[in-house]
Length: 267
Image (cartoon, rainbow, N blue to C red; front, side):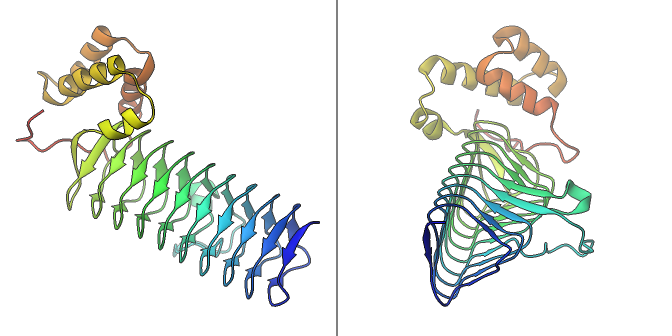
């Protein structure tokens, strides 16, 4: 085993450490923790529970990772937390393992940036390249798809799903599913168009963006019920590419429904 374990760190002998792992001063690593190759734990970090930290991930001071979930129904059942490769977990972040009622797994994908004070609750499933800005808070059972960004002080209700490439504005409260590519703003978040800046940054072409804008207007400002609008969009644009992702998300939306624009919104 390579790496560096500070003399004041407390690493349980039963913990599994890969090559080139570093654990800083006064940090604690529990018996069931696995730190894969190249993980860096800074000072004053606690990693507990049945927790796996992926290759190359760095955890900054005062983060609490893998402690028992904040769920009154939790009775000590075996559950786990998995964090992917090359993530950055900043100061005071908290992440909880899963519960029996949610599949017993909390998972964070690869290349995620979890900024100061953010909270990932029990049974959340987070994709790759996701950013949670300072103090963003996820309730239990939240699903966040790849490349989504949640602004500072935003909060996502339990069982809500955030689609790929979505953007949640700072201080927004999100109580329903957010469509892929959508942008949500407001104290009680409402859909405010597409995340055009994010789409351009990630290399979506002009034709795809133009088609998404047409589909967005047809879905949220067209005639008939939503099911009829979805059918019309599918016939007009097909089921492939970004529009196919959007339609699939809407069809799979959970019991809480999905965030919509304000009734007076100019689409």
